[in-house]
Length: 213
Image 1 (cartoon, helix red, strand yellow):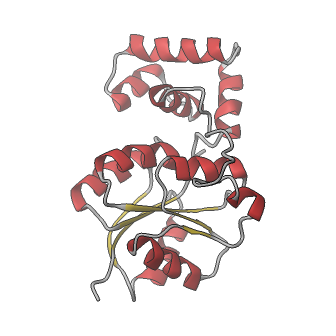
Image 2 (tube, rainbow, N blue to C red):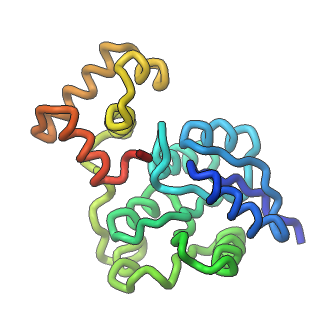
């Protein structure tokens, strides 16, 4: 049987190396990256069968990256490997296009089982997630609100980069938009959220899983 081609995305080198050791006997690791924007680039180039990604990553968090990958690489399966077990994160991940969700404290054999499940077209969610959260996933009559769902995708990108301490000119270069557009998005977000300082915006980003810092 053909080994799944896998890209690993996590900003902690020890985690990446640990995942590599677990997976290499049964998977082909075709790329490793440390931030969400590098993930988009490498995934577009390698077109892997599976992407393992964390929620908290710099430059572009995992949920935003998943939304983009779902549109650009619909055949690629996305499995979140993260420390976040809260309902907001889990449901946000599946809404963004995840096929699997595994906690970093799970056993290595569970991660391999998750990969096999999603490659075969099924969903996988770790048993470590409570039944009350599972009840809110797709197919249920309940569905908790999406992570920071009141903001647009571009606004969430700007908020994350602001929270990571990036200057306006740097944000403009990263997103390939003008400085005025960055300022426009930031002002709109702060007005919508009724915030007055960058510190408040940073706390919002941290509370909603929008930043890898």
